Length: 256
Length: 256
DNA sequence: CAGTGGTCTAGACCACGTG
DNA sequence: ACGTGGTCTAGACCACTGC
Image 1 (cartoon, chains in turn orange, purple, brown, red):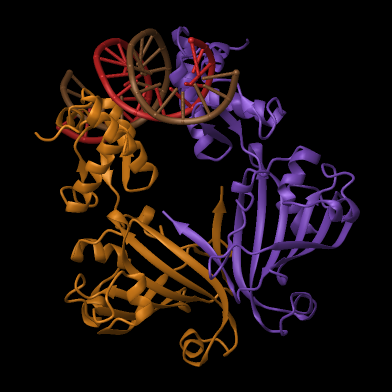
Image 2: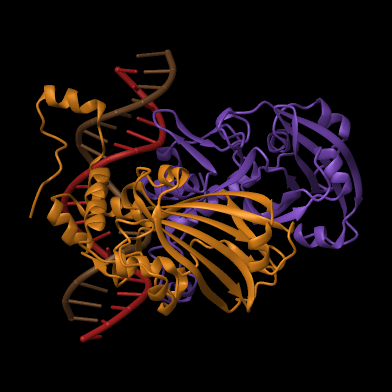
């Protein structure tokens, strides 16, 4: 069923017009797959159709589908499992639970983590948040504050902003009852898959309230991590400002 | 010319023995290419032989060579340029000069950068450095300190450790005369290509001497970035401890 | 055993860079 | 016009998973 992407056998005029916007077949297929993912045709954790099936659906060769899937897998949107199929990435699953959390214990031992919701309100978007989330200043956002502890030690204080129109019904209560990563909740309850994020990191002295919540002296150096998370189509869906205590933890990063 | 990697047409016994250590042909080719890079058969910035030439040399199809090169390109060891060839990655070239430097101006304007060598000595390796560099405690290392300024403002204080046996003849003098990224110098003068690095980041208060050199008050929160850089074959070749002033700059990172 | 993704091949044609 | 990497195809066989 459906639209075979146009590539060859086009008259010269069309060819010429298209040449500026030339895009390889597999990129077009990739785009179609992205649309299906965005549309929710295949849910996180589910298998997508096999390569042969997609090839016949799009009327291209298996190799072309494969290359499209290869790129999506490289971007961690899909997950290939030999002999089983190709699956939509999800924030459930122990293996990738901390996909976006780069704070790591110095001694390498996995800590016991706990989350405490401090606050959850709906407010008019501050200008800087509105800009980052592509909203108008009048729009409503959910502002969420929470404290993460590792081995009972308060370590991360997060200030989170979400578009209110998408995250209806998100309350401190529903959050407190929930166990697990926020991004997994966003997926199953609000259909929002976080796919990519950008972080800006700086060093900052702990002010009074954060210091108290994190149990450190005012003036203690902390990491300030500002994260913007994106769904399919590079649409920003979350702003998160975190303060990290780096006494027994560090932020790890790989450069290639 | 030379060794075709063994894959097919092997008797059953050998086949079975190899099955535990089964490795796809293109991975074997990738290994051979890596050896050639490590051996310096193709220097940074130079083109490697064309895909067809490599295919005939290794007695495999072009597609297999292509897949090997694809992976090396994805790891930034090689650089493909359509119509021209495939090139060995280099730290010369304006485009990738700051490949490993994640500190970015808040306002996005490229600053004018300057480097000042503070110190360059050869000493016995401290235990922690020796461990990180896979050296014995008795081995000699080069210890290098420098101050980076952006738009004349002191911003990064680096404490750098290099294996002395590799970096012979590296002196404060030769460094002061050199303009450009250190990694480019390492490449052309010492044949060491840095290919990958791991960083550990924490927040830390500026102590007396660093504070003075960076022109900030003692106690000012700084980013402390510990980097270990690796050459081909994942051999550690540099430890770098940097202190970053994040007044007008931030450390940027992308999460996938 | 059947179905999935993974590897490997051979060949055709396209886009790009350089003479 | 030629050589490079880039795309696309068709088909064979392999390795892994689950019934």
